[in-house]
Image (cartoon, rainbow, N blue to C red):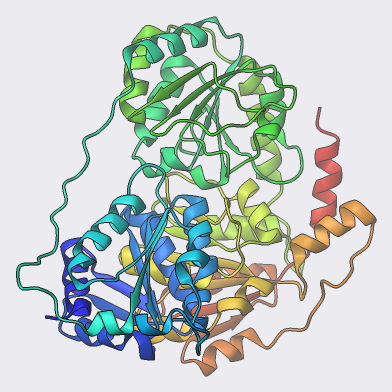
Length: 543
């Protein structure tokens, strides 16, 4: 057995069932070993797409997604998706080929020091330099990717080492699930005392709450302690959007209803919140609020986020222990009144029949087309701001957003991974025309792998979010416009189904027809982004 074959056996031992990637000369031994493996290899059209697929696979399963590339440009093409996984807390293991060890000391064809390149964007990067170390390197990669704040790790395999025989005594290492860590009694008691004394405490829930299965515990705590709950973009659905204590999503650049509530709050209970999701200066601009940090990992250092107490341990357990120690009988009337105002505005905004379509109308029709547990993948752009505000969720992890790293191009490859993980659900990639063109080639991958999903393109022939920011700052746009292909024809050319929206009334029917296809479907939908400036002006008037 050679090193590449042992690597694959170690991956099987870790429970890997799928790898996304592209074969190359320096990873041929691994590709050959996968041929005899139970692992499904999905050949992608770009390494960035492979990394995004592994990223979303990790987000939705909690297990490390795996991507594979060759050396040089193949490896560097992985970087954006790998960095996204680390920033957003998604477990991922990237594997790259490398030149032979005897060539590493000289300048050579396609050689880069990949360990140095991957080091800033991963939790750990290691090269396999001896055949008898492969099992340890693989075990370490998965351990680091899946523990603490989850993220990406990297394994580099030189081509000569991949071919070397492994001593017969070597076997994949077994792994055990780490024991659950619980918060200490003193921190829970101190948090309860602070909550009991607060005038208007608000719970802010973040991505770690969504991924740790804490949704029910957070909802129960909100009701027991009379806590209004604001969620980050990555924590949509942790408390159902129709819950009376749900104050929906914070995160768009403008000050919104959630900011009004946080301004009035004197205490923030931050459950599963990671500073990368939302700048702490947005939560506590005057640095005058009491903060309780509740998470499985300790807080980062930031002058706007200095917790008085850190409750570090299992989120569900900590909340269940907190509830009986803290009695709060008074309803948060200020928050409930603000919620009523917010709901009224949202309900009135999604009925326009105008064409091109208002973004609120598109989101309203999308929400009606998807059931509670279906999955929406949001790319990055102006549409993401409207999804943050108007696409409300009933379950966690039903709206997947790149928000820590906030990278364009994730929606289409991410939707492929979501469809693979949740084959019984509708999967919708929502993207702008700019983000779509960055990785639209993975539609061919989805067609070939029989993984149908629907892509809805907000078409404004521009980088809409940057145009929005330019309008707000300068009163005009610059260098953001471009032309587009016929998206329906483009989809059809790859064996997919293509649709064009020509009126507001058509979109619900087209969505239903698109979801009924057994191949990927693409919907081009013209959008009226003049609503962006109207929203900016309206929110500036909120008091």
